Image (cartoon, rainbow over all chains, first blue to last red):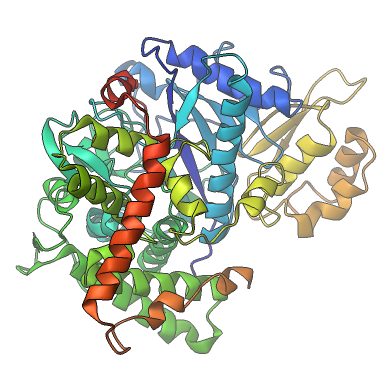
Length: 508
Length: 62
């Protein structure tokens, strides 16, 4: 068992114009996408999104939701020419989702790479902000998940899983983990309740916005386990688990743990290796209760009758997972898995004692340390606007204004991925997934690629009457090791197609 | 692997296994550090916090 699997992070950024709260966020988000695309020489008509295989209303439980029954916001596959939507040479998708610019990272295979290409996405947004700032008042972007006034927007994780794993088992064994995962991965939030009506501080940006345990929706009645079944891969073999309850992270350690611990728990579920029932009573209410207790001392009720602290349940998941890794691999465990287990243990140990000891690693703790400093120095109550301003500005993507970036720059936050590495990942795709084929096609043949998506690249060959659609349905093919020679040796798109045909597609 | 080398065991070494340091100096260091952080944040924090917070209005997303 390993932490490695195909995964990715997609983030919707908060957007605002200084001094103009009424500005149209859809138009602004379009400006963000087109400005960045132009900076990379991507024209709107080029490298747009290929929607042919999108089916957002398909449900993992086995039924399709009628389009008539769907809220308009669920209809993400309807092409709207006014909506900017491009693929970048790093294999990511940059587009306007509802009223936010969204960066969907390319597929990676390790939690650390997930952090690398997630940070690259924030640098993409930062560059757009810098370019837009040349025309005052510019546009500001925030890597957070709520405005504190009732609106929330997502940071979603995706994990490729085996189709053979029964979905009911995923629900029952993943839900308790998700109820408490926020203790080590939450980004912290000033205000309790979706509209912050109760002054206070809580662990997670998103927890108050969840209303149900299982469901298909992402914008209404948000569920702890999302059932969207849109694998973007060979559907008979794979499921893409779409996780919607996480927060956007600035702390690399928390981000690594979010992806890594979840991947390991999913591997346990795939192997049916959990030997005890860890079900939590009333998961939605408990999710919120856990978020509302930064002391971490309140207990939660388990279905087996025990009442334990959230960190104890996380410790149980850690012990079971690390024991299983040890049993299966012993000293042959891969370095990526060891890195995640080491941080998981270290962060839990800190949280079990004085949670403040995790301030270098966990966003909500880092943010709380600053807020408590203000409260003490200036005698501020939790309802004070200065504390809410700190909360929002924490996630400003600009290096000089974003408070999380200021803390990282002064060595107060553990940095696992240096900024130079993230900057390089703005233009380069991960080499060990099909993202490499997608990104490299765009990088080498920008004038020939008409559209692309997670599982296809559509190209125009000079002199041919119809477009050619190259399927990339296997996420672990189309890697540099597999097709690097073909792409690097092809002088033009026609040559590439010819050599792919001989090699039976980018798959091999 | 590169990722593995990123782990810095430094803080772990000040952990509970080691001899505890005197409480007062440690608290002082922490206080000084938070003061430095606040000074730095004071320099960049939006000057009109109330207006800034009121102006940060988002449409819902996913």
